[in-house]
Structure formats: structure tokens, C-alpha cells
Length: 195
Image 1 (cartoon, rainbow, N blue to C red):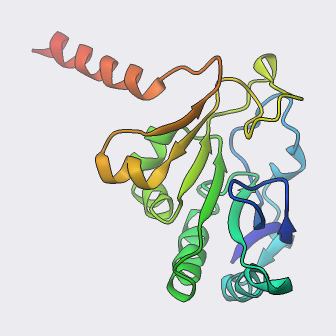
Image 2 (image 1 turned 180 degrees about the vertical axis):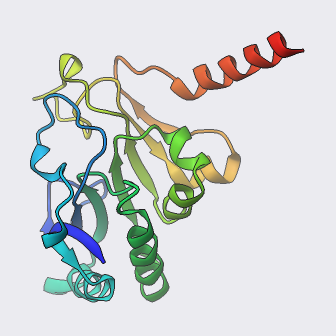
């Protein structure tokens, strides 16, 4: 059973392409200082909704008011270990019944972490665009009309990235640090030392 704070039928703010239906997941392991949505952090079993109810309601909302909408995933942390299996099930079902659904996600995890984790990658494969990185309050970009909250965060074209094996960035914050590249360099350095 998924834990959701809300299934928002029409979301005009948290969208990439225009109008979305959004799923607001419960639980976040990151606990970023200054987070605007800290009420979603703590695990709350009272928010449990059967996955099939989430799927049915979401499918109804995606085509309500005579308009086709995209799907947005946020919270909390959609990719939290407490959410990941439910997220995979929900996305599989939605895409099997409405294959043209475009999906935007926000995650505090780094993209390279998401794509290397078996379960996270399984969910990631349904996503088209993702905003990644933990929120850092000292680098906030409030009032700048950006899709992310702090300048270390970035937006990735997931489909192109997974297909090519190389991360395709749509936008990077002014304080972006390529942690994927740094991790690869550190791994190469360890191999050189061990050789």
C-alpha cells in the first residue's frame, strides 16, 4: 500500500509540460534543512492507500476535465525505500493502461544513485524527466522561477540518459557539482592504488 499525502487532480505548479496530476508521497530520508515540505518526512501509516485505488484514481484524474495531463511524482521522496515497490507497481499499471503518459519526478537522490540501484532504476525507467539532488538552503534559488529549490540541483532527460548510458542534463543549477563524475574518478583512483 502506498503512503500518499495527496493525489492532486490538477497541478499547474509542479509540472514540466503544462498540466499534471501529482502524487505526493509520504516519507523522506534526506531531511534537508530548510525543506519547504518537511511535513512529509516522517513515515505515516495512516496515509496508506491500496495501490490499485491510487492507480484507478490517478488514471481518472489524468483525463478529467476533458484534458490530457501528465503525471508528477513528489513528496516526501517518491524513491524512498519505503515507497519504491509501491511506486514501481503504480507506474507499471499506469503505463500499461495509458502508455503515452509523460512522467516528471523530483528526488533528493543523485541521478547516478537512482540508476545504479536495482529497485530505484526499475521505477526510474518509467520517468521521462527528473529533478535531482538534495535541497541546500544556503544555495536556495527562491524567486528565480526554476524547477528546483537550490542551485546544486539539476534536471535530467531520463529516457536519453538510460538509452545512451551517459547522463543528459536539461538544466544545471549554478552550484552544480557533477557527483557522478567525482564518484567515477574516485573509483578509478581506488583501482589505480590497488593495482
